[in-house]
Amino acid sequence: DAGVIQSPRHEVTEMGQEVTLRCKPISGHDYLFWYRQTMMRGLELLIYFNNNVPIDDSGMPEDRFSAKMPNASFSTLKIQPSEPRDSAVYFCASTHRGSTYEQYFGPGTRLTVT
Amino acid sequence: TQLLEQSPQFLSIQEGENLTVYCNSSSVFSSLQWYRQEPGEGPVLLVTVVTGGEVKKLKRLTFQFGDARKDSSLHITAAQPGDTGLYLCAGWNSGGSNYKLTFGKGTLLTVNP
View 1 (spheres, rainbow over the protein chains, first blue to last red):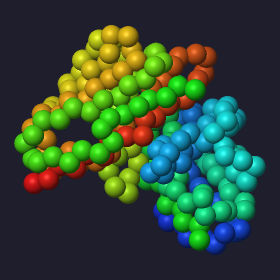
View 2 (view 1 turned 90 degrees about the vertical axis):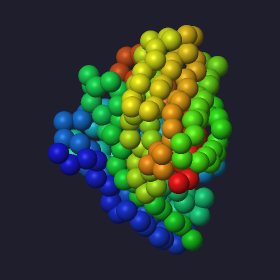
View 3 (view 1 turned 60 degrees about the vertical axis):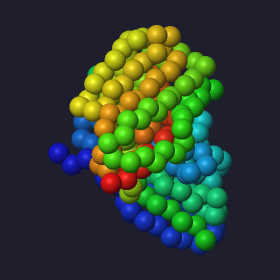
View 4 (view 1 turned 60 degrees about the horizontal axis):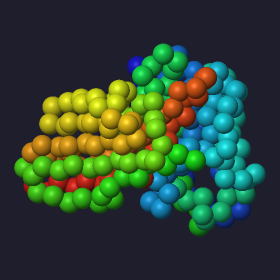
C-alpha cells in the first residue's frame, strides 16, 4: 500500500503569494494531522481532523492559515498571504482508531518564502 | 501545555560507541513513542511504551518508560552509521477521541564511521 502522499515536495514562493499544500492519507485512516517543523520550534501540530471534521486547530498560527478536508482521501493546507517566517517543512500524517496511536508521516513539503 | 524536553540536542559519536538520549516532562503521559527521522523524510515510529517501568528492546536499541510515566530514555549499543538521524519522543494522553501527540524537539545523532 502507498504511504501518505504529499505534494509538492518543494515550494519556493515570494512573500504575499498564496501557497497550497496537498495531502493524501493512507486509505482507511480516519485521522489526519498537519505539522510544521523548524529547527527553532521542532515539530508543531497545526490542526487535525477526524472523519474529515477539524477537531483541534489550536496550533494554527493565525488567520493566514487554513486547512480543509473535503473527503477521506484528500486534505489541503493553505497559506494566504505567505510570509518569510512561514518557511519550514510541512508534514501530513494519518492514523486510524484502534492503532497503537502510531502516526504515519508523509515525506513533507519544504516551503521557502522569499 | 504539556512539554517534552529532549537531551542532548546534538550528539556526535564514533561507530561502536554506546549512547543514551533522554526525554523528560513534568506531566504524566498515557503512553510515549519514539520516532526516527532521516534527512528529507518524515518521522517513522520505532516503539510505543505504555506501562510505567516498561522496557522494550529493538535489536541494539533499548527503550525505557519511567515509573511515573513522565520520562523515557533510548539507549543504543554499539552505534552504527545507519543509526544516524533525528530521534523524537512523543507523548500521548487518553481522553475521548483525542489522538493528539506532543513532540519533543529531538536529538540529532551522528555516528561517524
